[in-house]
Length: 167
Length: 159
Image (cartoon, rainbow over all chains, first blue to last red; front, top):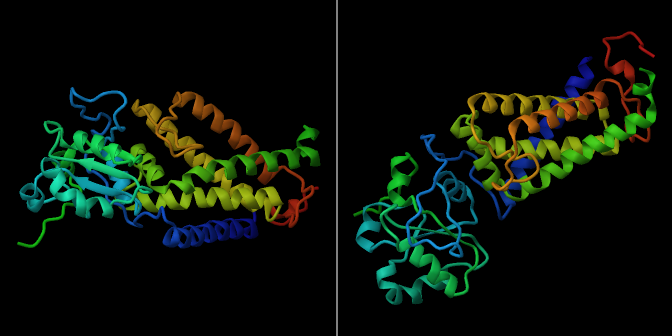
């Protein structure tokens, strides 16, 4: 193995690095260069409420929800009440309280892009607002919907970033 | 073992290995967020580096695979892919030893593709042999920018 081959191999890796970073900067599916991932390892199971039906929108585990969070293309919908949302939520999530759906539909629905992935969540495994919200959004014609049943509780416990609005 | 040095075999392994890696890179480049999750699930990469690895791995597969197909610096590109395959084998083996159920992330960023890790490792060993062949044994045939055999030794002409 001589130096020329090793140098060229290193050049190939370097060029691929430049191309990858440049492509990611302009890609609609770009991800953050430094990711945020759960610090816990127990991510293999997803909490599922009893009322979940097979034809409901698909469920995300914590690590899958974290993956969508890295993606510039995904929109998070917080289905809890505004008071809970104000105490802290997944960064960038849109508050859309399911219990007051009609009050918010007029302002929130136009902000939700049908082409982009949507992740609904609520408090955690003991709350089903994320499921109801996902069903409702599907009725509105959205197709790329996912439900994160772990919710804000599991999100926060795993050490993922949380956004708290200024009082 | 003269057939190993037959130029036709060199072309076959070049196209096969290059094609496999180019194909393997496409879905991962299209879905970096999902591929990053698979990298996370290997539990081998420190959290701050996961996204970078998820971006760089498929780009390296694509570039080195394309160069190998075209025969531009084929031994150097083959060396990159040989090293990558070695890394894959080590990563799979560690998780096999751990007994973790794993999404491969070999050809797709989808979480649906799960295989027995032992089979995946066997497949990668075959790929390793082919990739090593493009670097160390293949003779340039129909290559745009071939590299001579002498490039492999430190000076003496082998052939």
